[in-house]
Length: 155
Image (cartoon, rainbow, N blue to C red):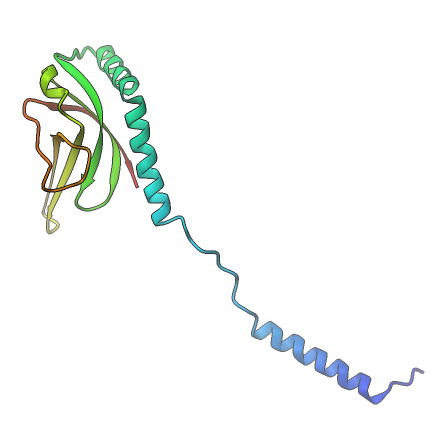
């Protein structure tokens, strides 16, 4: 038979006790810093606005092609500009505007204004504007221009 020294039993008992305490009081799981919230929102808005600015004429041509396949011909000039929702929620996208050439040339963006009154009434307006900045004192609407297509991405 093996002869054990008295401290071996004490060490084994201490190890078993530490193991059981470790199971019950384990450290919390590791958590990483979440940069996906605000940073990803800014990147999405900037990326979509850049795509609309860069490929606006191509998107405009594509929309006109789709509409003409359905027998809808546009009269006047068309142009694709960015749309920014102001009010509840944030969304960014592209809007095609149509109208007389001199008026369409003035349009830089479309402001989408949303109004909610309780749960009963919800109104949304698309206003072609002369600036693509969200400055409330310098936004001016452009008359005689209509919105013919609306493409939005929720952010």
